[in-house]
Image (cartoon, rainbow, N blue to C red; front, side, top):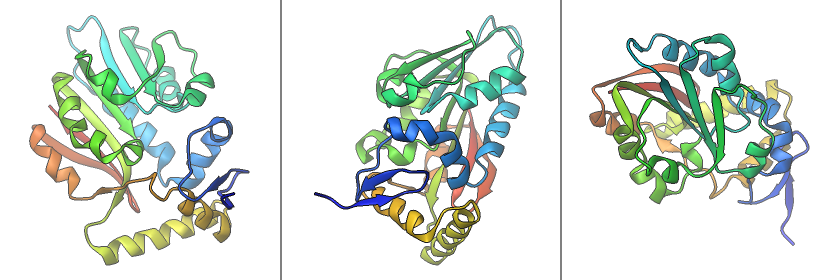
Length: 239
């Protein structure tokens, strides 16, 4: 039997066995805030980008959120953006997350599905959002992910990406990882819980290289960094 490691918040997983199951969905909101620097701030930045989007003449403003978890971002956007034209398609591959959605606004539809399936349908969106999700995609899925995202954006649309990145400089990456340990300890996690989660994520989490941002920028007209909190980066790409 594989050894189980405490990952904080009463979560236990073996090495490389992390998954977004029912145990995780129950504590996800608290766990995310304590594990991801700038988590709430990024939600606010996404809202701000959406609200300044030029939607003149549009009958409907279509948003796609890939990796929506419990729908916390949808609550943030829809509770503060009263435009009745806004419609959000929110997708997560975890059934446990979709089963425990906390957003009940009729302008949002939640689907248990994969990013690839949804993007392959060819529907066009004004905003596509992907927060802290690419790191959990397989190398095969991520290879053409951003090409598909670009093909599904309307003219004048934006793609907002936030994730945990690996710095191209190994020394810089090491410093950021150590500071992340400090952040998590300040959030109340013990060293044993921090190390336990790191073990649970082995082979499950695949951080993108920081240079990936510039690599995919040729798909878009321009991009800007919105937030850099240790090794978590949020950027917006403009069509």
